[in-house]
Image (cartoon, rainbow, N blue to C red):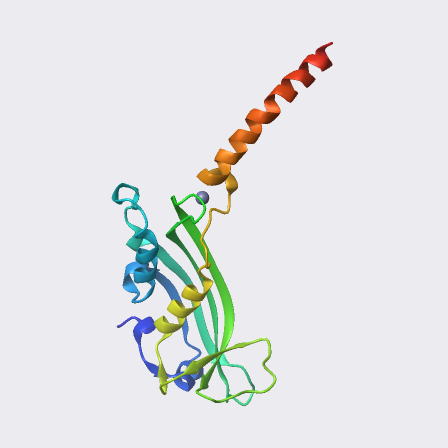
Length: 183
Ligand SMILES: [Zn+2]
């Protein structure tokens, strides 16, 4: 049996089957994602290149169904998480970037619209069929920050350098205060 992630079927078929696809795939099994991650890591010196960046795992679930009782509007609910290697734009060091995305996509043909689904996003299908992997890749690419940075300032070299300086500056006062308290 093949991987349903890479099957190509009409949206209505995926929806009619209420297909649920559990995802646990290496980054390397995707097509566009690895090259985007690689382009970002290209800024690093060879000795800082994270080993096994292609082995990062994308996990999640795609659940197909219909948004309406008349079974006319196919929808896919997507939940994805991945932790990929990235370069912090502040300190230019590699770090592990956590990605998380959740959405409900209406599966509509090009120029097709559906009223009353303002809380949904639309996945426009240029062809009659769709391949779930394309949705996964697109959602994760959209989840990538424009400028990746360490979230935790303690791990960011650019920020911890500033913090060290500030600590140095406050130390004389701290010492003085300690002295005053003692007196
Ligand atoms: Zn940083």
